[in-house]
Length: 396
Image (cartoon, rainbow, N blue to C red; front, side, top):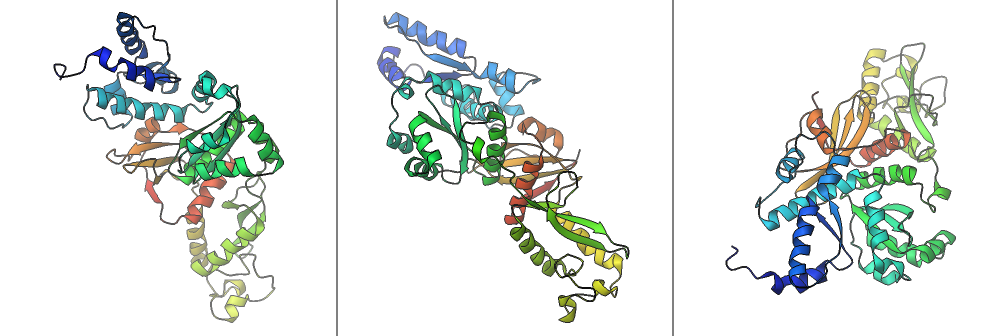
């Protein structure tokens, strides 16, 4: 292979060009950078670039691994590697590892330092040029100022279009962003669910300047249950209250009622016991023979409650150990969310050839995330809207 390869001086100019204004990322970057500088010194050229080492980053962001060699680390994380110990194979494996590390860097220290080090972002930004460099993909985007600080975080199914809207809008917030923006970075997610969760968590952690004014609860109403004095499980829509345990949550009262009307039809429930028909006698559906009579105690409570429990089980992941599988960033990749004992633990990505069937396997792949009312609402709302999602029951 080396016998027919070009000499270094033949490719040196191209190396300079492709690394101009870039940060060199490598697994054990000290070694690679030393080799590059040595070869350039022989040509009488002083080569200086910033570097990032994926070994050091892995030790910080994925601690307690048995080995941090590229081969063993990628294998334990389920990263597929072809042509091991060949330049192209190792480079692609390092790219995939670096993507995973960027996802695990929840404080965005890597990205902010990278933006700050780019000289081209220190000049007055050309908004059109920024838009041209962005892809039309699903993900989370970060708008930076000239110091590299994140001033706005958003998510979109089409990042390019969304940034274009920011840069052409005449709203007060958009005008401020247009004046202050120096760069836009992004993280591909493939999945809208992953994008929603990352956006929510990172707004809370980073607290960008132009997200502060819009911070509000993602939901206002919730579905609750209680057992009446006749032994029937009743359902009730009410304003969301963090002190009470809800089945699921909704963005507003209208969406909650729409959901419940559909659920009454799907599970053949009683409108009166679902809080949708205020009466002291039978409900409207009983009158048209679509209710089995729980409203006037004609149906046995045990039989009625079984159907209510089916609805509750379907729309709540309380006490469950499951993995929610969705689209990935590439064709051969999927995203995964881990729910353990009813608690959202985090998310990650895996290759389709990688088998996940236990919580222990999943824990090596995911980036831990906070379980709070917003994340619960996002997940439950997404599950309601996307019936075809793959859900795997996990063993401990």
